[in-house]
Amino acid sequence: MPVLTRKSTVYTPETVDAVLFSPKQIAARVKVLGRQINKDYKGKSLVIVSILKGSFMFLADLVRELKIPVELDFLSLSSYEGDRSSGMVRLHFDIRRDIRGRDVLLLDDIVDTGFSLAYARKHLLAKEPKSLSIGVLLDKAEKRKVLVPVQYMGFNIGDRFVVGYGLDYNDRLRELPYIGVLKSETLRP
Ligand code: IMP
Ligand code: MG
Image (cartoon, rainbow, N blue to C red; front, side, top):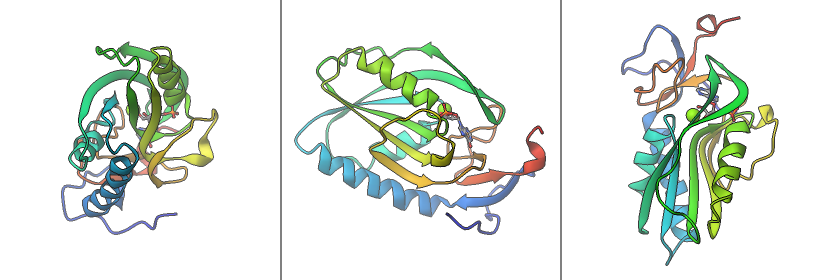
């Protein structure tokens, strides 16, 4: 379990309690994930399907670690209301390219109950890719309600609500360069 560090010296909104992972820690972990992906897909090309909006920063940093040809596409899903999963996943928009017969990596910011990734995985598998793997920066493994096979995982964070580095609370705080824990009084009871 990660240890909470002092507030970052960078912009820290009142609603953020502590920095869980600094930009440096995130960059180091993303580098390791990049190396793993480079090794696993050596000699191949990859279609990365990133789930908007939460994974935009993770995607941007991860692709810069890759040494294989990649094509990018995006899916937009929502399931969260405030700080909890509604359990109902909605697809706002779909990918545009044909992934039939392609090696695909599905990326998300965080896996919590698993409903979103399970939905996205099933949705993409119906398009008959050659392979489909899943990568997430953060994992709340203890909160899983549906099993999803995750091949690339950054950090396990237990049951806490985090913001920054793409992750939001009611669509705010995505811009923070670190991952922070939201003050519990900010969350509705
Ligand atoms: P799941 O469907 O419960 O696995 O939830 C996954 C989605 O919920 C992620 O793609 C995030 O958008 C959102 N989410 C889950 N936990 C957090 C969190 O701690 N902070 C911000 N967003 C979260
Ligand atoms: Mg998301």
